[in-house]
Image (cartoon, rainbow, N blue to C red):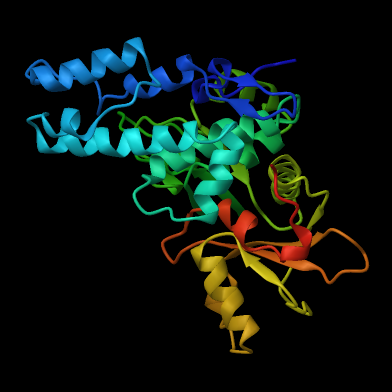
Length: 327
């Protein structure tokens, strides 16, 4: 089996008997290597002491007085945030259980970076054994914001952070079309280059065709199925649809803020103009039981053609009768 997403740290975790990820000391220590937490050359003795103590024992309790003794205001705040997040992880047996508790509760105080990293490693676990590069690239939407553009009649999604890099000279029309900086290199994933994904999976430099009716949206549906099965034990089928027409929104989940806004308008019977409809990137029908009403999932981009999928909405937005919580 080919490996992927090495940078998420899944090699630093263990699995319990149910397949959930266990936070090892090595996994916790990886947070201590973040540039915000490595004491700089001019760091005070208190900050150095906290860092050294946690490297020696990453589960060690850290008292409020130890953090208050750190001289730098930003450093104190960084440590408070990191330790609150670490303590949340340690209160639960698995990273999956910690994530469910987090998104069902209060996300305030948890940096989006930490939430995305947690999704990244959990999704790596949920997709273990998947050998379809299109599914894996579609899964990046769960934890990597995207920028979208029309190219040769296709709706193309490229990694927003990759686009924000720097370089020297544009190498392809796609680079220029997406507004990539000079020198950035990005390729649209195709059958011809799909084997390249495995060596490039941590570079996030392959774009995905999300045009309705093509395999990108179908691959995203597979990811949603795996995510729900892994986190909630929910055996659902997720089918991409081509249009909003003739859809009875008995229940809907916005997969992002824009999708939620559009779903709310449709639910209230408000007219949705053509420009807004064009921002819908994907519409999916989720079915758990033929006897139950379908659930519709709406994914949309902003006016600025950015896409920020919120996988937590799949946890908190489904009908209660569908959800069998992971314990």
